[in-house]
Image (cartoon, rainbow, N blue to C red; front, side, top):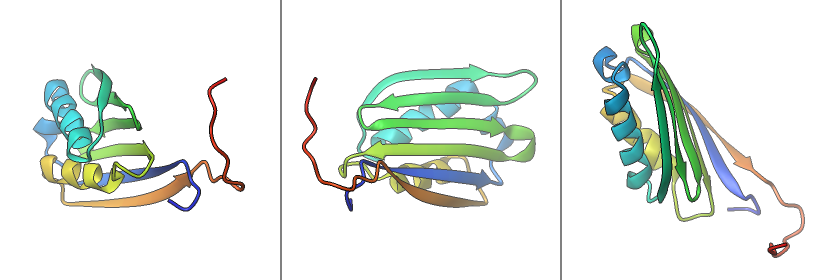
Amino acid sequence: MNNSLGRHVLAEIYGCNFDILNNREEVEAIMVNAALEAGAEVREVVFHKFSPQGVSGVVVISESHLAIHTWPELGYAAVDVFTCGDRVNPWDACNYLTEQFMAGHMTATEMKRGIVEDSKEAVNL
């Protein structure tokens, strides 16, 4: 992982199905399954449905988190997937979301988080 603590993918998902993006239960299930598809361990889940439309939520994973905000009227979802360690691939989650939202396309950028200059062992204080 090149001395970084994690990988953070910021995804723009376009051309999504309105009915999926506007359904809190469906967005929540898809996000949880995206975490599992990537090999993550799900810890907590919180989602909210807005009026008249839109869903926001977060899936807390042992390896960090997945977060989303949807604009169903635009067929758009803003997603971030942050994973620590090298066991979970954030791109697997992003690709799963793109497929499940029936999206036209996704653009995304990956950032390395916690670039460590000197390799040191972490200790519990």
